[in-house]
Length: 497
Image 1: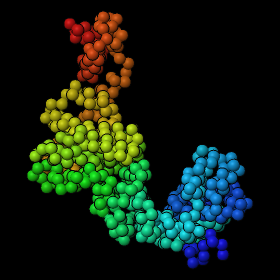
Image 2 (image 1 turned 45 degrees about the horizontal axis):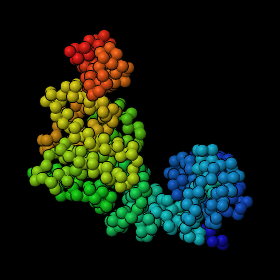
Image 3 (image 1 turned 90 degrees about the horizontal axis):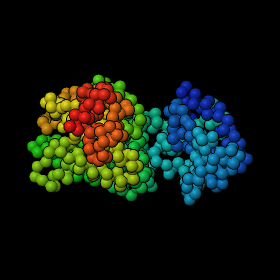
Image 4 (image 1 turned 135 degrees about the vertical axis):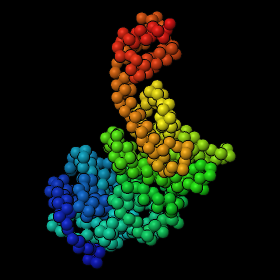
């Protein structure tokens, strides 16, 4: 038997469901795959479908991009496939034997050389059992119910909805798998195998060895999952969060406020949970602005970034603890310090400037949102006070409001320095209504008075007064004092007098 052929002992007959059959039939109808199979046959190459694509087929989920494993010279084979198919050849890692073929810009075939001398040896080096199955491409495209190569029980773990390591060496080979386990569990809504969890705990510090780009990619995927909170709690228990965010670890043992039992670290986890709950079900938390929230959070990236802000929004309190004997409320008093620390964390993880700025905005403005909510509850909040904040934030205000409410829900009624959840909901509703119906129409419409008008009509030289006058004019429009150009001209004349 050739080295790359599995023995009968490693093959496993599975029960193909209707959903799986539909996916299989769709694959078998793809002309591209049959052309690929012909190229492989001509070169005497045996291709195996592996990894996430096969896992998704077994879950009855459609697949688009395929992962294929093979023996031999992957780079040469992928280059030949690209040439014969009229596709693009993309070398990924020549040293590891990894290449990609992109067909018509929308179908990708990823080729990888066996890790070891056979498909069985290759599967032994994969991360989790649900990703350590294979199927010969020939069988997949020609049989009604092909068997799987499944030496580690991946099919049974799929049915049990379980993430289990292939071997005790899995995490040692690549410590990023510590994060990937939670990402898969959150995305697939699976549970973690207890032995796998126990192994993780001893290896958590090794996350520091992983390249920053790989870590932030996994974190963004994890945080974007709809129900990631339970997995974040497990990560906290196993020490993974401490390894990833030493700044967060410093909040362990610190109370949210002097004399209160709630620990800052616990508060951070609970804020993350509350933020996720609000995003998942805005009708229960902020019903008046729920449609706007659903629209805003259609981008999974935003969901991930607001949750990230929720996790780290209070890290500045540990700095305050070291600088004073008492400190203000977690978010209200330290949001700017937390935002500065976030810049260090995000830069360390090599996040894009866009992502850095987004989370910075959420954290930095969350304290101001709580202060404004207190003013609203005391009937001190005027449209003029709301105007500058709303204009600076735009629709990012929705993320800030969700974070502020998440903080308040996590702090609980005992924290009297924060507005109540009821007050914050009322404030969020009014703030969004004023922004959408009064402020946004003004700042997006053509100006009633321009800088040229100030020079030509009022003979005002350019300078700081320009900006001040135009800004105050917009506020007067928002307040309803000015509606027409004539009224605006009269207002300017009165201000100059």
